[in-house]
Amino acid sequence: MEEHILDWSFVPDRIKTIKESLPEGVTLVAVSKTHPAAAIQAAYDAGQRVFGENKVQEMTAKYNELPKDIEWHFIGHVQKNKIRQMAPYVSMIHGIDSYDALAETNRQAEKNGRVIDCLLQLHVAAEETKFGFAPEECTAMLEEGRWRDLKNVRICGVMGMATNTDDEQRIRQDFQAIYDFYTQAKDRFFADADWFSRISAGMSGDYEIAVCTGCNIVRIGSNIFGQRYYPEKSK
Image 1: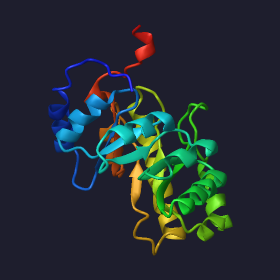
Image 2 (image 1 turned 90 degrees about the horizontal axis):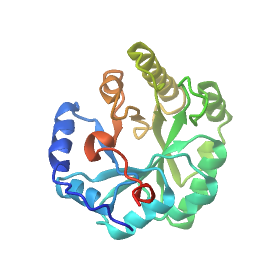
Image 3 (image 1 turned 90 degrees about the vertical axis):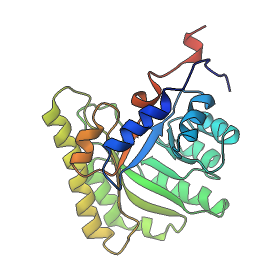
């Protein structure tokens, strides 16, 4: 993997500042997509263990290069043909947005003798370009019940993104919709499932609002590592 030659000594202080701002029980996923292994190693050396990537090939290369006690969270759109590559090691898949993706994850997890934790991705934002179940579609999938036969995946909660806007009220509304769906799904389908307890919402620009509306996983990249790095654009 090509390394971007940079001094990553600022990373530990940034992680410390963010973690100190998070309430107890909120998990920080350090979004390391496009950043080199050296940046992740700097965060790892500062005690960070959970990292998020949105491209399977890039995540797999980093998995092979970096310490094996890292928890890799896949936070991108799930393509069924790529699940096989990450099934041996991924800790959590955030972006399950169809029953077919859930079933394929189950199939690949079974092949690897694993149970893979998954989050159901909801689409509540104004942008049509974002992926995810519409809330009513997700409810229909859960009501249908086929997911109950999948023994090698564990649905642990929900994931979503707010509208990309400066309107804080709209952002808060989107996060509230994600939280409300989570509580309804918990009551209706997962009342006895202690593991259905995670709400992944909030990124560098809005995670504080997300935490205030009940989310307990935040996905933060630029506030830790700086702007994304694309090697091909620097040549």
